Length: 286
Image (cartoon, rainbow, N blue to C red):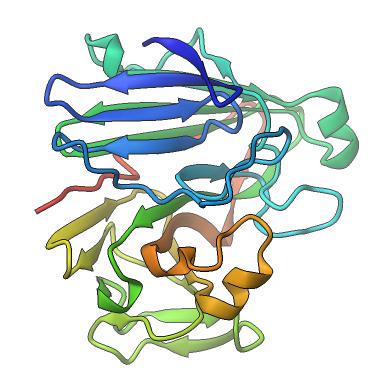
């Protein structure tokens, strides 16, 4: 598990005998690259890279905890966007080949308690396998009182052309449409396709969601556990131009499909731990 400095950031490089690789920043525990055995990049990263802390670059796979969105004094994605540490309490699922996995931890600070008065430990196990990448988060309440939180893994997928992509597995489900004042609707389409700005939170979703890229003849399969919601987002052209950390044309080659627990926050009693027992993020290419 080599640790190097890439573009000014401490970065962990994961490799697998199959030829696949992944790069993980200690800042935010953010996965910024995932390449398959053919060296094809599977994750989208904004063309407007950010070379300065404390702002993370838009893209890859990132953690949102304990809030999602700009609520009060918390940053947009909560406490996850800061420097993490290598974890001395590794996941029991760590493989014998430590070149292909890493365990990270972020703990609450005195400054955090001034903003959100609950002490916690946030852990993330990242494991690279043949044709898949697994992220297993754990949240422990180290406080003397219960607290609730929302959680998301934001997955920015690299696609050939957003207009040639469809998402399967969310048909007939209820969703909140953030473009219609968060009104609740039921999905009527057989599969989701894209021809304009899109921002929906799908509820009670299945464990597997498929993202099919027709031009690349590739399918991402996102597997998740204990995260019943899914956020599907593409800014389209006008919003992309308004976002300072996204290139004007970037929307054409990206789709964000988040695994999340949003509608019903997770409640943890003192010293309880919330952990995903199975693979919350697994993608494969066909």
